[in-house]
Image (cartoon, rainbow, N blue to C red; front, side, top):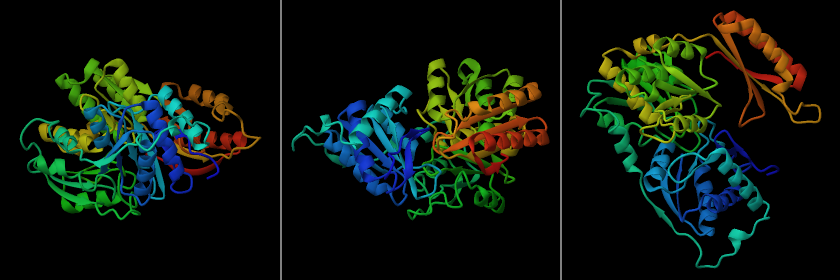
Length: 459
């Protein structure tokens, strides 16, 4: 390990046993106890190959610092957050979310089930790096009696919360659903709430072997789900990511319904029933312009935050709001949860389908009209010739495009929180205009910061 992994958009993440080592996990465990406090920590994980050894190392770090560990086993991230809130103790989830199995990560929750705010995260990172370098011996000044214990428990109350989040005994009776568990953390628990609510559930991606998480299945690869929904004649399909804190849906015709459309469906439904607090929804800067236009027509206010569901949560709590999320499928129902919850979001979405008597395709199509969006990533290498502020190096060109667009489009250029990438997103009412503008900025980036294009996507 040449460079210790740092905190990114969602905890620390890296190549397991290379960047994210046992030593890193031990140091992070010690740091978590020192900064977050408490004498008891909860740990959950997804089923990737490296999760058991990382859980063991994280447990060792926490216990060596004097706190007890309760292992929740392989469970979705929202189940860990629920248990943290229910017991008011800190927690950790070992998962790299939608990444391939060779990656892994550790995300922390403060007592109460919320992800760390910027200041607390910075304190944990500083302590962890000092622990890793052996510069801080405070938590090592202990004897054999000052070690924590290890036990196991279940987060079954999370399932009860999800099932009880909608009215009626079996509101999904008569529905046939396809649920894609991404061979991940929801492989056992994910389908259960839908069965309890009356649906007939066909499950795919529920055979994790340590290496197949997110491999051709899950929210980032919905093709298998789309095909199965059509073949089975299902009313909808639901695809979780590796740790099930996000959801991408598929309508009865096999078309993808992303986070923006799900949020639009829920926001308008909740607004009509008075459940949408302050008649406002929270999104990130990645949310499609079409969402903003649709909410404007519906008389619903929108608050935008930086990318990351923890920023969405901060805005929800700061403004006293009840609904927010991301285009990627992180949706936070704040009256029910402290983090994105793909399983809960699926229940809420299908409840709207059941109560409205309308197919998901009709609800999604009527909720918003997507503005053409072009997203490209460009990779850059650190070096003496790279500008200290890669986004700032494009400022004049970004401003020129924004002036040309006026109210018909928008430009977003930002650094990735997890990779050495510059993310360029362009939206415009005219698809060709968006494509041309994005190509223009990619060319500028190549010249200004020595970047090279790595992919392109048009959601």
